[in-house]
Length: 340
Image (cartoon, rainbow, N blue to C red; front, side, top):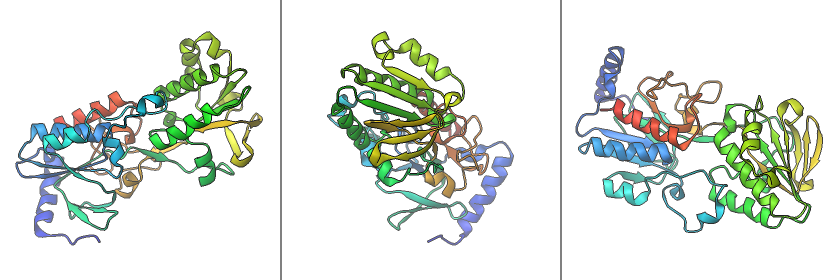
């Protein structure tokens, strides 16, 4: 599917390399250039809108595989605490601004030819490529953590469908039931969202007689536990046991059918489990050569890839970036400024 290297793309490549060596001016957009934005989360949608506004003569096309990321759902209010905020730019705003939309998935990038290959088999030509690939679960060496376990114990980390499944489990929680929240080790724990999730689950548990919540916190340090203690109402906090990594909170094995979690501190049985996985940058980041061995995309302050200087990376996929909506929007604005 990869295209041959045409004279135009060869010339473009030489010009881009020379301009980057001179300080990055290759990112400046010219009228008529084709901009491809991959990913319709907060960063991608914001960047597409801002680029279209700043460069009305440029062609801006947004590629997103999941149309629900760009549309509001009327029943989302019932999922408060279980969904991360969406982009401010919805489908109607993008269309009104003249941003093109392709409901598809980019599976590889031919940088030399300036083409992105799609899951559907099509490919798209581009002059500039901005990637907001988001995050994806990382493989973990946890025995029993298979597709069945992930379905039974939904992460509900950005997925409305999983959030509804988790909420249904909480609504069916028996009296004196046990809920477990598993938070992964390292930066992928997304501290702000993790705290919000713990507070939301504690609130549900507090409304069920005798129910309790155990938080298995694989992250280093006690910052998240302290933040929870500061924010949680006393009646909810009294039902919560917070088990840090130092206390044996890391998960070794699971048996979803039996509701069993084997931790370094011993076995735990649960009625409802919210199993948040360890994360990495979305799959296209690695396929495009933008992710390093950590699974994240090393970038400079403007979001320009350290591994491929002609690429701009937005949002959560950037290595060491704060994984918040505010930071995702900031990264989109920084990228737009870079293309001015």
